[in-house]
Length: 595
Image (cartoon, rainbow, N blue to C red; front, side, top):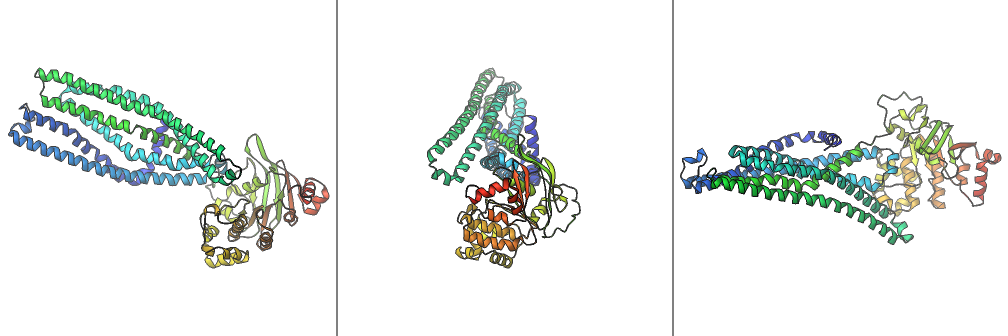
């Protein structure tokens, strides 16, 4: 175990603090369990010594043979029952603590994953994150529940047995202890190789889950473009890679078990050879030799169990490594810990001023998306962003919502740098309707409220004002209707209507819309546009639009090209200027392009 492993394991200690009493009890029980296990071979050996009338322990020497045997059998039964009872208590406590540990880790992993910036999620497939939150955490639970305390118990048992053997007959005891050296060296040698192989298994499993998740989410495209056979072949390659990785771990797992068995047999043979010679020479009784033969088997039992737990332990260490890697991912976007400056304007849901000052941003260092963008949107002004695909329109919205941080420049909301505002405050003042609407499984009302404390009456009134009543009447239970995952039982336009409604319920100061009416039929769009006119009154609006009718209604149009602001003005001014906007508008009028 390297230094990083120890650091990551130490990171788990705070999760165990709440269960320290259970853990303390479990660790204290290790000693009586080990003593109960170590005394059993001794009692069996004493029974054989009594039957052969060999020298016995002092506390048995004055008793008749029948009474001595009865006492030994009774003590053996008590030792067996005591060991089984204490092991049952141990197992229950360990499993309970393990489940609580994994539940807390999974909660923290989920919270950390939700707090990571979109930059991290852009480069990390969802399937790989799911693997860390599910199978990696389960592997950690398995190694803690059946491995960690078990290994400690085995070590205590080894020490108790070793001390007992040395006390009874130091020569045979030393022989058995020496036999442990090659086993320990073999385990350590295989451990390093198995660890690397097991990490590859986890990586291949992550890729397998990522491929499966991608194909299930894109099933409609797969079927429409007849990709079933090709995608199945690709998934089969991922499966073969995972199978090959697992096969690589089987060799090490099998090798350690076989190695321990060979060493154990050799140790028993050595005890029989040396012990038999000592019994024949009268230096030791047969009862003592029997005790050592039983001890030799008991001595290797912890190592056998360690071999059986070998896969679990290494899988757990790999899981700790992968979980640690996720928890060590820095949270790029955080609230500043000192109090934010006093706002220059009221934080109520009134029109807000938005300023971009020399903002530059790139998703990758070699591909700048925005280059020194500067503009001001006055309170209550409605601004449209237009430009060719890839010019940075959506990036402007992402930066304004602080889903990403700009590399240079700053963004001001009512005079305050948004990096100094708490994220909750910033996003309460922004209402965002994206082109790709996401709905959670649950009721319509739940999707409209999300985390906002909105009464049922207010919900009904807003839905009526936004023209959602025809949609709610079509649903079987109105606002209480259950939505499937991602709102699959609604059309794209209906999902967009709900997205606009849940923004309206929050009464934002700045309304941001990324082609919000793209998936609506003309009738629904006309209804929504009329209702949006009411929603936009007294609010600042930033709209990404590709339709000329939407852009013409804006107070000002910002034209972006290759990450730069190349033109700005109203529709008439830009058409008269004859620049990029005029060319795009002319092409759209001919049906050849979008803005």
